Image (cartoon, rainbow, N blue to C red):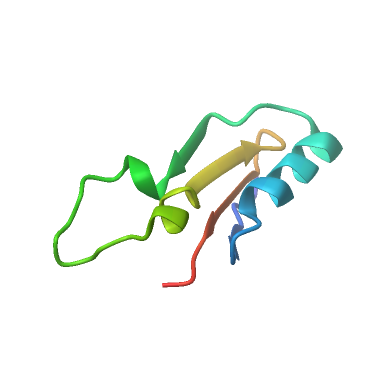
Length: 74
């Protein structure tokens, strides 16, 4: 069986988009990680606002397909 796992990138609207996809396809998010969940790196500071952005989210929509995404403006 062919699989496809698209990775979508947003500029701050990832959570809203994935809530919409969830309302269309159903299912649950097995993982939602925000940038604040990463260990701090003194060489790469993240603003307080960016810490709330989605680092990674996934939504299985079938046996063969998982939608994945993140917010990125870096």
